[in-house]
Image 1 (tube, rainbow over the protein chains, first blue to last red):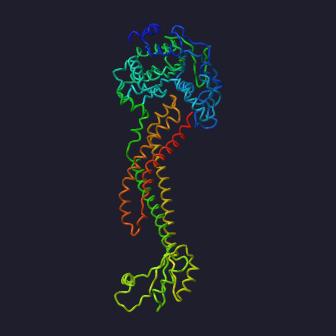
Image 2: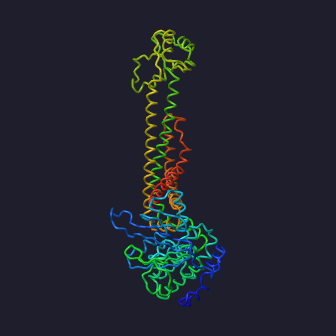
Image 3: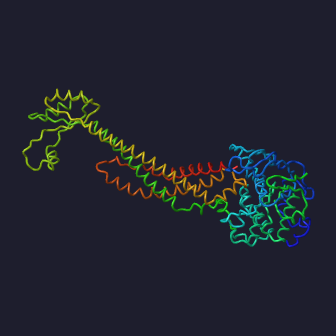
Length: 269
Length: 279
């Protein structure tokens, strides 16, 4: 795994085999053919966000968001701290409802109004196709590392007997196979970050959102993570990475959404 | 990750076994179940007593014969009256024995002869007229009115017991609601995470509901187990109430399941209401 710190294209063979196998089987894709196409995956139309409970007339945290990210695209979400990157990612992950406008994710449209029960089921099903790497990891403290990583698979209803190989391979890939039984509280920040990444990737999401994913990693680990994100993108996953790092976008130039004080200053073409 | 561990985690990804442990909640529900069992048995017994007294009293009456009446003739005349199934002369010695605590051993008072009637569908006004005709000077004392009053009292006791039962159910529901809220507070981050990762409201609420149903059911079973010996003892102590103090075994057996159902429903309501606020 040490070799992963180099060119992402060289790291390809080291990606967990099951990711390739399953994506090939399900989608009929070949890795070398997988690139972003122009089908919209995430579309924001005149979106504004004001936090629940904010006083009437308070300014929106995010406003006038109007952009489309294509299926299979890789997008950097850039901007200073407090620009609204995390809130935008949460809306992309359907964890926040816009206060106005419309967010379309994988064909499902979500507006400001509360959803009816049947629609809530559809939104929940859609969320299972989206994975997020959180800035603060959000590992469940009472579960072991392996159980945390297995969580998306269990939510997807995968039979228990089939979980173990995928979880074990994922843990080995992020270098945590020897810590599979450990509780998150006993891990270092970097190890927790890697466990959170393994949890996000193990379910082979259609959309992968990462919020400052390298914040707790050293430079080597950060590059390995970037390699993974690039690999996920190559396999067809739509990837959005929020970061204030300048080093990572420089290593992998891609389209970028630049946020500044709640507004998008630059939209990828 | 052993297979047993795997199964346990799969069943409890929210860690509810630790967030909602066996402790205060089952104990409180158990106390409620104990009260419910007592109220239930009270309501059941009161209904039994009321019914027993009503049927016993409405079928009997006493005739006090006048001085000088020939008891055998009077008994024969009363036996022949319509609506009288049987007429039996009360044993004077037995009567004297009953009255001794109040009258003492002094024989100064002569007790009037008394005949007990067992009725078969007789109406009291018509029977009183018939008794007056058959045995002039005789006095008919129907048991219905006083037994009716006692039956009304028993009925009131039953209503009170059922009200207590309802109150106990409401308090138990409140206890479970507080427990669900505490569990939600303890596992708020986990619930939010699972929600964001695509768990349906029903899945999350169902996990809480199953855990709280288990706690409520086990607590109620404990409460019923404690109440049962006390109820058996009370049943044995009930004076002259053979057949009346029958314990409601079916309902006592159902109580833990009803408590579990209540816990499940309340937890579902609390969780779904909270989850509906999420996007």
